Length: 224
Image 1 (cartoon, rainbow, N blue to C red):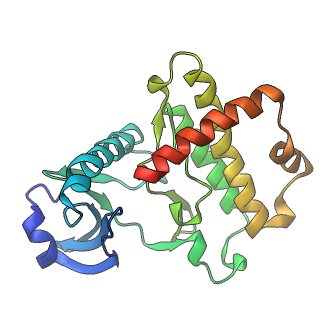
Image 2: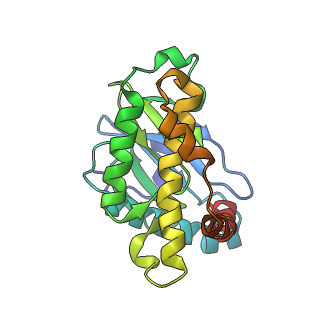
């Protein structure tokens, strides 16, 4: 699907734009081909240097992340990385958490499904690193969670040596804690005492790892 799509055809096949390009962020387009809709993260409208350095790097990283979790229920399908700085992804009908009109729109089991999805992601040897951002979790029309925006994701094989392996373990925990924080916001009555304790506990070693982790994540988010 979308194998022959070129950058020049994006405007002709575009049916909506979710976000226009800015100086440091790609455009997000909805396109349609043969009745199939897709989301395109497109850096082609960004300035030359950002497009060809940061844009191509981020598209490469995000494409690699999507391939790492390919076939996992709850992650959009990657259709292709286009020649140039753009990636074409499956459109998931639904609403992201930040756009929900009311937390009552969520089914009671939604965050249980989120936890199961995060466990499946981690089993693939990858961490998302930005699950606390509500726009990165969609509530599908089927009531199930979907995780999007993988530009800041980190693979386990990138963090084999010390101290990166310790930081990777911290990122694993961050993904898990992000779901608890979101549950606390949207469905506070379902958060257990044990989960609340996990949010506040910090050992000395963990605090040191958090400091390094925060600097690394800030760098990734700045360029993503």
